[in-house]
Image (tube, rainbow, N blue to C red; front, side, top):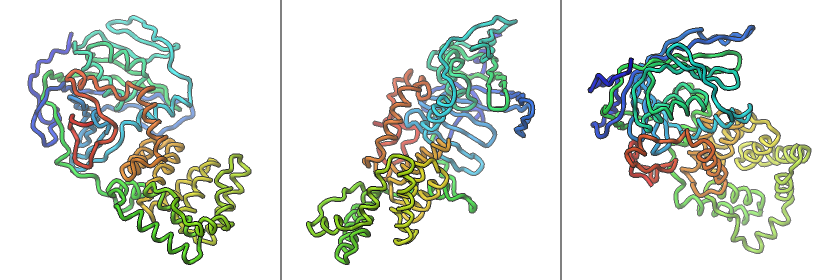
Length: 448
C-alpha cells in the first residue's frame, strides 16, 4: 500500500507557521519513531530500552523543521544556521550547521571510514541493507514517490534529527520516494540501537514558511555556567567601535612615557587581539626600550617553544610574569592558556580563556582559542558559537583564517550536510555561513 497525499491541507500543529504567511509550498508529514536499545553486558546507560517519539516534519524551501511537543527545530540551509525553539516560552537558541559536520569529522577520525558498498538481502515486503556484515537499513517497499529534491530533504531531516550511517542516508536520498516504513540500525558505545520509522499524514504542496519574529533569544538562567554566560554575552556584543584602537594605543603611549615598556607591549597585544591592529609605528626610543626589556624577551622566547620541555618551561615563565603583573593581566592569562593547550591541558586552558573573556569580552581573538579548546573536548556546538562570536566582532582578524579554512574543508568533505535539495528545485541560490549584516535575515533567500 502506498502513502497517498490524501490530505490537501494540514493543521497548524502539523505544519510550521512561525508568525509568517504562507508563501511557498513544501511537504508536510508525521513521523513516528520507536527506538529500541540493547545494552552490552555489564553496561548500564540509564536510558530506557524502548521509547516512542511523535514528530511533525516540514520539508520547506531552503529549510526543514521538526516539531516534537513544545520543541521545534529549524534547519536553515540558506544561512547555514539551525534554531532550537521552545514554543511554550517563545524563545530560541541559534547554532551553526557546521558544528554537526564538525562532530561527524571528529567521530570519523576516531574510527575507520565508511568506504564500501551496501549488501542487500530480500525479506518479506522489505530489503535489509548491510555494511560489512552489520545491518544498516531495513526498507519497506511501500512509499510515496517524490522528487529527488524532496527525497534529499527527507534524508537531511534524518541526518540532523536521528542520525544514521551515511550510506543508508544516501540510499534514502537517492530513492526518490518517502518510504511508508523503514528501520535504521546504529552501533554506539556500549549499546546497539534500532529506530523504526513510520510515516503518516503525508501532505504534498503544503504551505511552508517560517520567521523568528514571534520569538526572542533564550534568556540566561540564573545559575547558567560561566561558558554559557560568556557565549551569550558575546552574541549580543557589537563590534569594537572606531575608538577602541586609538584608546588602547594611547594607553600604551602613557605606559612608554612612564618607562613601563613591558606593560606597554602587553597593551599593544591586547589592542591587536581586539581590533587586529599591528604592533608598529614605534618611535626609536620605544623600540630601544622594548629591546632592552628582559621580560619581553623571556615571553617571546617561551611562546616560540616547540617541544614539550620547552613549552613546560615557557609555562613556568608566563606564570612567574603573571605573579609580577597580577593574575588579572589578560594577555598573560591568554598566553598561559595557549601554553596549557599545547600541553593538552584543555580544561585548564578553557578556564583561562573564560577568565580573559569575562574581563575583556571584546578581545575577539580569544574566541578562536576558546573554540579550539572546546572542539578538542568534543564540544563542537559551543566551539562554533565561540568562533561565530569572535568573527562577528572582528571578521578580518587573521586568527580566524583557520576556522574559515575548516569550514571550507567541511563543505568539500561533507557536502551532504549542506545539501539544500528543495532550494535547488526552486532555484534558490545558497549563501555563506554568516549573514551579510546584523539585520534579521532569517528565512531570507536574498543573501550574498
